[in-house]
Structure formats: C-alpha cells, structure tokens
Length: 310
Image (cartoon, rainbow, N blue to C red; front, side, top):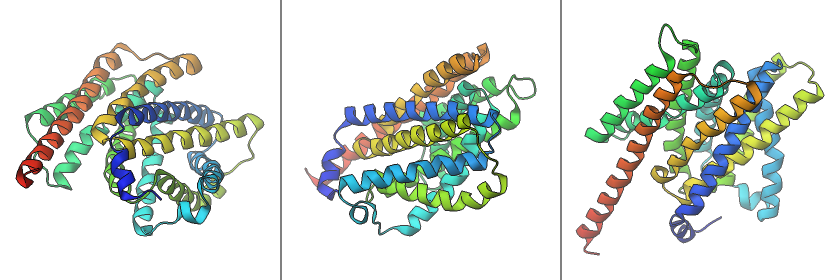
C-alpha cells in the first residue's frame, strides 16, 4: 500500500488525474450503450448488474497478483465502510442502469450531471456547510435545465425515467463523499474490488430468480459491460487519488459527447432541441459549483497557512 507521503505527493498530479477521469468516463459511456443493447435483447437489470460486477472480479484479482499479491494489495482495515459503500453502490447501480434503459443515452447522461447539484445540497445537510450566492445560483440554474430537458407533463422522455436518473445522480453525489473518505486510506484497487465482490453476493439471488440462457451475442454484451465498467470505475476512482474532486469532475461532462455519439451511431437517435437548451444549464451549474469549491478550498488553505505563520 502507498504510504501517506506518497499519497500527498500524488495529489499534485492534476494532468494525470484529468486524463484518468476522461478515459474512465469514456469507459462508462461505452458501458451505458452496451447496457441499453443488453436490456433491449431481453436481459433483466438484476442479471446485468450481477455480470457487470462478476466479470470485473477476476480482472481485479489478476491485477492484485501482478501488483504484489492478493493479501497485500486487497487487505483492508475498514470492512464496515466498504459494506456501506456496497449498499449505496447497489442502489446507485439500479438507478443508473435503470436510467440508461428507460431514457435516450444523451438525456440519461445529462441528468446524471446533476450530481454536483445534489453534492451541494448534501454538503448543507450532512457537512453543515454554508452555501453562498454562487453555489445557490448554480443549483437554481441546474434545476431549470432539468425542467427544460424533462418537460414535466409534455416531454419526449418519460417522467419516471427522469426521476430514476435524478435518483441515480443523487446516489453518485452521496457515494462521492464516501469515496473521498475511503481514498484517504484505501487504494483504488481495494475500493473497486470490495465493491465488486459485495455486489456479486448481493445480486446473486436476484440473478438466479430472473436468469434465462444467454445467446452468444448476449454473452459478448455482458462481458463488454464488465470490462468497460471495470476500466471506467478504476480510472474514475484513481483520479480522485491524483487530483481534487472539484478539478477532475469537469471531465465528467465529456460523457454527453460520448453518449450523443453512441446514441447516434448505435441507436440512430439524436437529442431534441430542448436537451440542447437544457444541457448547457446543467453543465454550467456543475462547472460553477466545481469552480466555487476550488476557490473556497484555496482560500481555506491560505487562511490556514496565515494562521500557522507558514
């Protein structure tokens, strides 16, 4: 495991963090397209979740062996936190897989961008943070974007699907706070492995209940979902070790480009004008929140140095 000194040094590698986050987001967008194809082919969401995580377990075990041994690389002193992360993660997976199945890819991706908005609201409730004009303005702009995209009562996307996507974004925000805490002591490999292993155990009974024999095409889809998801998850988690959440999260907005591209090339769908109007508002909201958190963090750092006389 990395020493705390190594971890402190690694936090000063913003370009590496941005590159990792960008590659990770591409993996997740590709996984979303495969989930939609797999669902359309008749595979139940519970089975998709099971295979998504089961495929990643051997990949992560091989990685651990090559990195220095299973016991050394995968041991943890925080099983309770990993269990909590797994429970949150399973709920998040149900909602985020559901959003991809119920909505066009670009809309599912855009509504997922509301995670920073929920992060602000959670920081008020859980962390008792005071939120000023900039972040409140961003929250209002973000929710205006959501209303434009989902057009309650008369839109091109089902309202239930929009609600599921927003629930998924809320879980992403909740998990991000938890991952930040876990990342202080655990490597990305440990975090992703224990989440995968726990999810396999949780989803296994549901998978048995809904399982039907898969065709060769469906097997390729579930393997692709597992591989793309593992690559995405490891890189996204690793980015938090090498850079601050507020700086790397900007890369998440590349997801709408991948989602629109996959939607167009695979499903022959392009977002309507309302999505093109609403999406920039949601992206703007997230960018303002990230920028504001960066400014506040720097200000706190300067204040701390002045207070200690360094």
